[in-house]
Length: 193
Picture 1 (cartoon, rainbow, N blue to C red):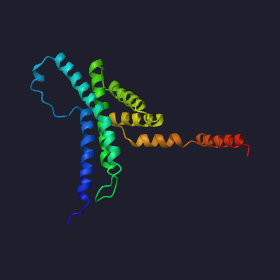
Picture 2 (cartoon, rainbow, N blue to C red):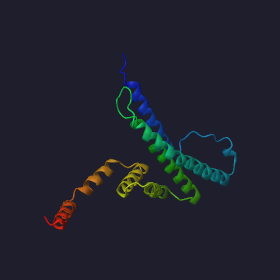
Picture 3 (cartoon, helix red, strand yellow):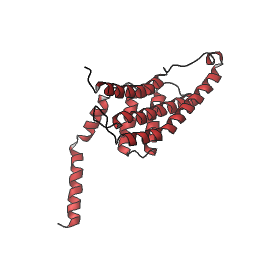
Picture 4 (cartoon, helix red, strand yellow):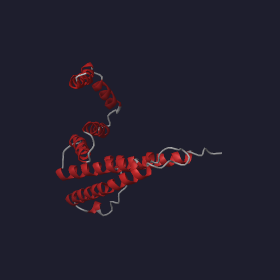
């Protein structure tokens, strides 16, 4: 007899792989494309078409993002039948994957428009665009820094363990430990007790 929860878990994993995989394929430019017509066009025309495609795809993802957030919010209140966990685990993949695709297509459009040389400029664009998009969406500044830094590490194929290590080392200072103590002492002195 098969495990009753295995099908549900497999669907969750597939949704995550599909949405995150699409963003990864976009980053590496390995989506399947029909190039029969574009291969006949001159290079400047192909360049303009690539810019238009990037803008259209980015715009579509930005339009879909609020709806992905709405469906996540509505589905996260429900429980999965066999696993008993929130359906939000499955549906959070949509806003994350769509935003990653939107950022990637935006970076591709910027890269094509400005014809930036080399990949360093592109990776810095990942850092800058993701930071600005998250900030505009109202994400806390600390998490804008964390997320955009993590995206930069992902874009450069750097080990993510370095992000966690830097995060831990940054918080592991004796000087920072004094800050809550000073705030507590200031509050106690203000209350007069």
